[in-house]
Length: 339
Image (cartoon, rainbow, N blue to C red; front, side, top):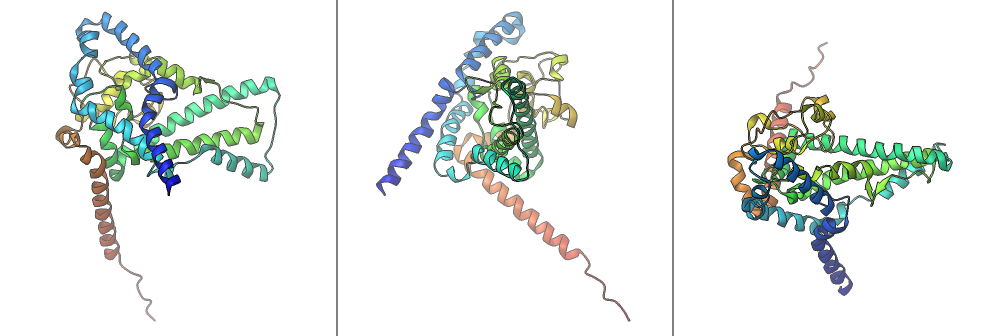
């Protein structure tokens, strides 16, 4: 019993401190301090050239951005999500190494095996790094797309879109259910791709990283990725935005204007939105506000943020089940043969 209590307390403490660790020491985090710092430098440069944006200092120090009810909810979610993942939701965590080992053993049993020399391993490592980045980015887009298209999932994704202001912490403003589903998909894919490469080319093929982060993701985040959830309007221009999601494009995604709904769902690359017809390249500063419209006010309560998605999802599932039962009852049965 004492061991269980000690373990639970340790998990609670680690979860509560994880946001600070992510900010200070984890380059895989979207709000790692270096990304935030480089983003602020980029924003200062852009706002110095565009006085019509309102000024860098004025925008940065806007009280609503950092101290509003919406921002405070961001901070609360930032802490409770890792706490929940390490405690009551720990059972749902997928270990990518187990997936990798399963893929390797399966392919090996099928006769797939190989090794490479050190010279070839460098090129294959670059290929693995690129494959992981592209597949991860596509799956982020696809899962995000599903959360917008499937009504039951949308009820959970509303939490992210209920933000009335954007700051660096808003990047992690997700319902725990969405976090678990997204992590399960991405972690599984990470394990599968690593397993395929290892089975084909051996253990010498490794990912190219910078301080533990995929080099492509590191470069993207360093080039203003953290500004996607920020008060700064930063556009890359239409030519670049056909390929790369700019901060302005993601802010369009959070806009409360109807014409902006379900647009720009990509993470780093804009190609998926362009391929599937969800791309919106801004022409000027089109945003007036963020949120869900009138429903946004309801999500100022943490109780609503955590509980309502379950209630709304259950209601939709019951409605769907009743409709399917009703449709099935209307379906004519087989006509008896006459002799």
